Image 1 (tube, one colour):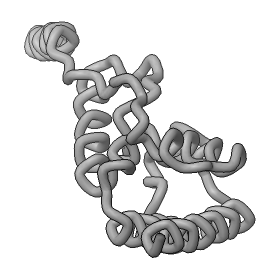
Image 2: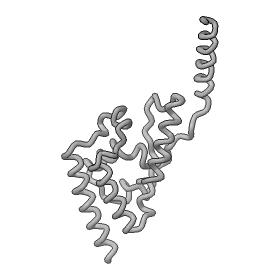
Image 3: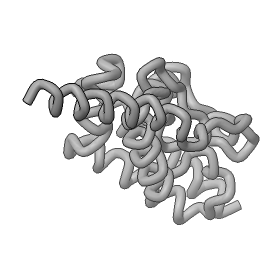
Length: 156
């Protein structure tokens, strides 16, 4: 019985080591003028909030931590990023038309207010990503102000 346990342990350990050689592509490209932080006038406190709570999964610039480089965690994180960018990629903000931007802002606030974003697993590993009532109110206020500005620009 001990021999079988050792064999299983060695096979698992070998599999773990081999898995480290197969990593997903990292989600990091240079920030362009299409990025929301470049395309819009984002106040510092909102920029910090977006950076802490949103941009790792919803942009082309993920800030990887040491454990993101360990398989199978790297694959789980990569899946979250791919799925997050499918829903919303703030690096592509400038490519959206005004009505899409308005919808994005509305959806962002709704997801945060409902507690769906940021993901609970993300907050466990990134405690500074948690948004309190005051931060949610600030995000909503900024979103409404930006929506008004976008509508005014579209009418010109």
